[in-house]
Image 1 (cartoon, rainbow, N blue to C red):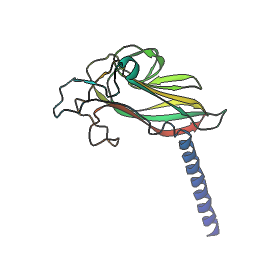
Image 2: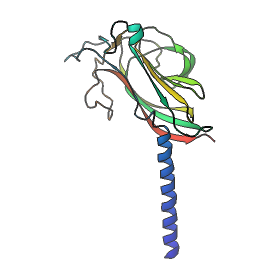
Image 3: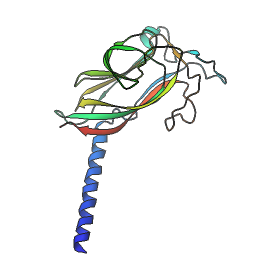
Image 4: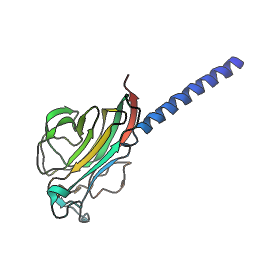
Length: 209
């Protein structure tokens, strides 16, 4: 009986230690967890949107080339001198955008390179160390389309690195959410978002040995 009690206590202790470590690693990436890129439409969503409808960005004021965009700068957690693999779940409603001179991973994720169109929305994460940037809405061609995304992508980030999250609408216009697409379990579900968005959620963090 004593041996059984010892085994159960040891197992519980090991499980608790593992869970605590996992929670700590999640905190390391808290700057990214739940982050949202948002391009809301200026006008209310019509009752029966026109397929392929173009809309004006609520972010645009007098000069769309300079103000239909936003940038958020954050600091990644962790310890200096350590590197972490961060797995992100990427979900949202977006229009297509083309990129070039980088590496395509899966259907929508793109590492490095540059934008290859001057009018469609850009969703970008830049990491200072190791220096790299990523795009989230890659496609083979642009067009009057809107679609949902839901995939995971893994990036490497050094402890204390600077994270720059940047959205650029480029021209003050966007393809509206004319299909009233909804991403399950992501706000404003069950209602459709009036515009476009991407939400990043951290699903795993591991230290690179």
